Length: 78
Image (cartoon, rainbow, N blue to C red):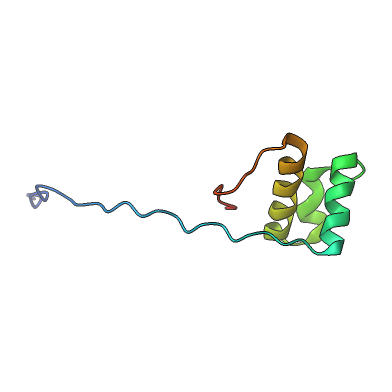
């Protein structure tokens, strides 16, 4: 069987990702950030302890920002 010809040119439009929303931590989350920074809670265990992957990622991002003094703004959470 003969295959149909391929299109001569495919146009692809680049789409910028939506900016990440500003993270506002609750007082509970702030305590968790401090516990991770102090080493009493390992950051790899946040998902299992919290049961919420997005919350764990937001907390981990805050830990990295505070530990490095660098902003992670614009870095996607996924």
